[in-house]
Image 1 (spheres, rainbow, N blue to C red):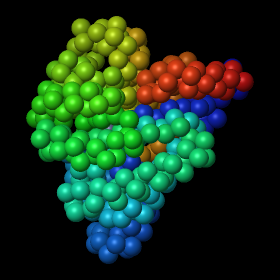
Image 2 (cartoon, protein in one colour):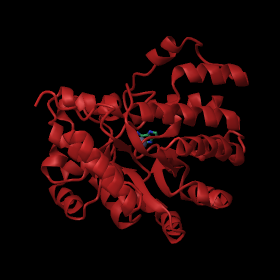
Image 3 (spheres, rainbow, N blue to C red):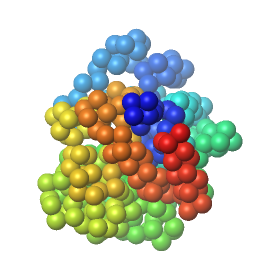
Length: 335
Ligand code: ADE
Ligand code: ZN
């Protein structure tokens, strides 16, 4: 039994369906880009920069994260960031990557949208040529409001083939999903998939609104759903995936200790939980490290392989591709 490959191993194929490309900006690359573009940083020592990553809550993290993004200026910068993430993802056994990108912050900083899309698009095209299945999901900054999100969706029209869905990120409390009803309806009418950060810091009502007002296909985080047994039953009955990021939740203090992570309650309730890294440069590691953290506190191999199956089921891919990934997973698990 002990010889069986653990779920955290890169030999076990995985889908990563909740991560932000802007959250993969490792300090080494941050320094390279800052120097390349002449943008000042508080330090040019990656270790000193990493030491700042101690957060009291989501907003503390977002302040540092958005601050660092000032170094992103050119198509080459966006290419280098995405290429770094996609390389790390493959090193972690990822065979399907669905990655959030949020152009709103860059466009507001004066970066042309075309530069963002050229850079990210080139890195994703290269990865596809190397055999990785990967797609982009457009995230809206919820605290900029619904009108800004709607405007962003309009601006993205020339790049419609470059992304497969929309999501909602950044400051949650005070910006409930219902505010974004119309822009999500517009995205749905345009054939885009829908997902939404909800229940990371917001109460269960945020999760309910994501389902009822935004008609999302999956929820990012969804932690606080465990406070509401009726909602938990509904999520299980309707097979709504909850895209959980354990190291993120500990780093941002949504969860005190990893052994108390709500993913265990979710799995007991029959929820289709999945595991991803959220912002791997900030929270202590990529998807493999997130699986390893759960293994270290007693999550069973069956539970974690189940989460990987859930992520392939939840991925925005066709049935043939899903079948191929699930078969490769079965072979890796039993082999
Ligand atoms: N943007 C990047 N990471 C995020 C998170 N964990 N929650 C909300 N917005 C984010
Ligand atoms: Zn996230």
